[in-house]
Length: 113
Length: 115
Image 1 (cartoon, helix red, strand yellow):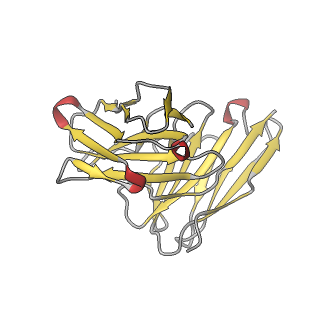
Image 2 (cartoon, one colour; image 1 turned 90 degrees about the vertical axis):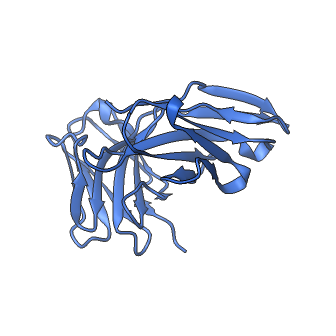
């Protein structure tokens, strides 16, 4: 069974630039999560989708972050414009139900200079 | 606000030693509890989870955790660790029912097992 796929794996951008991350969850998983993990901390939920609807985006900085899951399968997370403090690993995860992620992707390590 | 505390940031054990990693949470309602593990260079993986029922939960690779509601704790245990258990371990909690909140992770405990 293929796992959660993410791309790119690494990205370096300058502050005020834009960046987008892509995630393809495990086939059949209705719930998709985006997490931000800053070095030395646990992951923090940015947004949770159930199929193509948003369940929780209370911790998403909506002035600069956006995410979509238009067809209820893969998803993109965008940052525009990026700030230095956005440097982190962005994790995508999925699960069959909404009780918590069961499978994580490898993450995208973002460095903002 | 909901929070999760992992008391030990770095634990060093010898092989065959017993392991107990502490996890306490602050939310007073009904909760779902999780332990995740991240081996060096690998993805986060779900070790075990508690939703309801028997408070002693068994997970993969010989790990177990006990939910003690009165202590707001969900400690992870393994009777005898192996070198391959070297990893970072994260406790996480989410509330259920009305006022449901996002899964909150602790800051992690780095376990180093020496051969």
